[in-house]
Image (cartoon, one colour):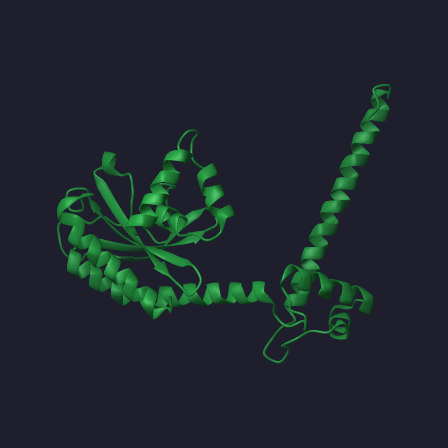
Length: 262
């Protein structure tokens, strides 16, 4: 905008800019929608795509269909033969691994809970942080410490620290650290280094009289989940007599990781 523009001209210029930005956003969304429609053409009988097929099924001209296929190749969604590319393979492996972990974990968690007398929780990484996916409550004792399935855990929970310490995607870790109050990110980096060394993560729940310790469950490519023991800080102190329980937790996660092919 020129400083000599009148207020009316300035408003008109700003409106034109917003309109142009809106058109760009609309175009991006339409492209994403179209890419989704193309990828949805894969099924048990359609193992690769062609410009002619895409054009016919989606009502596009062949030139446009060909351009979309090239873009999807470039982004890694398709390979050079227009079959599913490396990104789709990675997502498929991740989803398969997660489902396998969740299906194999319950009996191992039940055994660990019975042997320790402590509630066992498994969490997976969701959009807003670690999400509780499985819970095996202790069957003995007069005090029951538990957590609901679907609960999104705090940033400094034992499970969050384990999932971040062994996370292979730097952007995910950066987002996690950025969620912390000013001045705490540096301390948390040191804590994650400690988790990587010791292969377990502890939560900071002492002020509540609670304690939680978690260990990683690995898949073929990356950390898949975090399994944790949660109890009172007297039953599960961060040092001393809880060491045996921590070793039992690590043995259980190692068994589960082996079962899912880590």
